[in-house]
Length: 166
Image 1 (cartoon, rainbow, N blue to C red):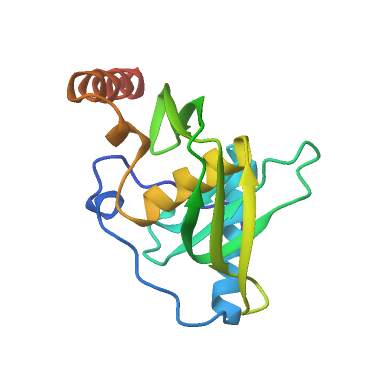
Image 2: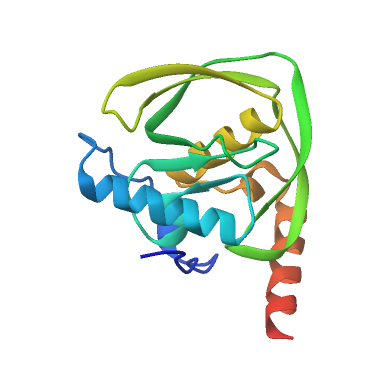
């Protein structure tokens, strides 16, 4: 099917926790393929299904240099997080034109259902860890701006709306 459209930031689905995926089916695999096409079209290093209006706990990430290391995840959860934080400018196609530095654990161990329908535990570090945590936030009905002060959040949302009107 290819790249899909992003839902707008004020859509209630971005504030709603996504539904667990009971098993990996051909439909799930097709959604993942569309998500990868959408992520590459941004371009970005991760995407969660709710960002394109699909309310399933599905995410894809690829922070590899050659863009050949995509990880498909269903029902991801952080098992362990490092104490050391890493600050990175985060953004979202659902709130275009703006970004903000967010501090998150530098490394995480994540458990997820992989594309072979097996539970997998994997360690992610650096940009990979940032992206995975960003996607899990989306699956839980949160966005990166929820990590900001109310004033900073309001300013970013207003700036994005202004940019979209132009």
